[in-house]
Image 1 (cartoon, one colour):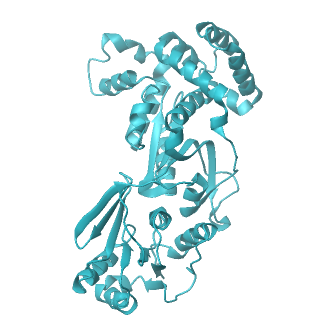
Image 2 (cartoon, rainbow, N blue to C red; image 1 turned 120 degrees about the horizontal axis):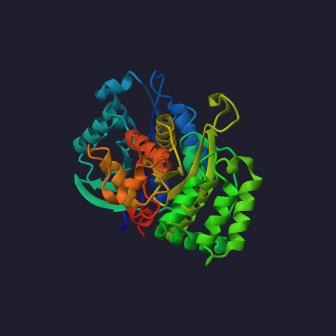
Image 3 (cartoon, helix red, strand yellow; image 1 turned 60 degrees about the horizontal axis):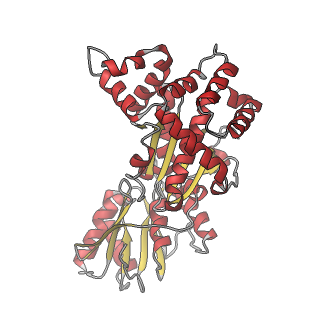
Length: 413
């Protein structure tokens, strides 16, 4: 991103549910002062909670700001006030006419705020002011000055953590696990080699998928899997299966755990130096006790990834079925914790071409083509249902062999 000089500028933000959009410019630039436009006595929103989320995060960054009371830098409007643009303009006149240079972040603002700010700038011919808007889908910061776009580039924040992103939206990690995945080089390499075998060998894929069946002889299937990958380090494979078998919860989704690891270490390998943070099996709950119905997590993300430009990507790895309400819940949880900066994705045990065949089949009356008739077998039934549920819920669906190319859409690899 080309350098925008904010020396001597005052930063003005508008309180919003997704405080990440207000946090990013504060981390990316340096300002002489900070102002906040917020709302009270609203039947629709609770800005005080949103402001508190941002306040706690900023405090850890060494930025003190009083969001609690009305003061000369925390401008509080009542909901009825913002229905009258002239009232907002009067307040802008009173508080900002004497400020030489202002950086206005309008990303989270309601339309009356945006209209009032725009009119205030034009009426006073404030040609040095910046207007900033963060595009969530593209993770770009669009900055205008004197009605001209002066910057429209992506940005990176070093040291950004998943815990911070969650707190900005009023959530917390139920149990923080400090783990350096990059140090597990042996395991990373094993899963990389295993994934290569998996993508090239249809029989291996089907053996692993069959582990989902309740009545299958798991020991027999595991032995057959080992024979199919005997050129790999089966000692490590034994350790992985032993580890899974010791955990009753993991036993119920034996292949699901393996698929999560295959996808997770693939993502880690291709994007490790390009992302801000990543975690597996991330359990979350509401940040405030009064919002919780229990101390148990409200959701668990198989793989949570945070990019350096604030995009929160949630990967749901399903080796078998996924009900429609689970798919909808995943989508809701993702957007709840990250708003437009969130992206929910389903990773399946199938290849890209197999997913395409399933999707094409749903629009045909003649059924699968000869090359893909096997997808109609009972073995694939729950996977077909999971893919269709995800599509209906608005999740992206990725093949296990298509992770690197699809990830390029969200991360510069």
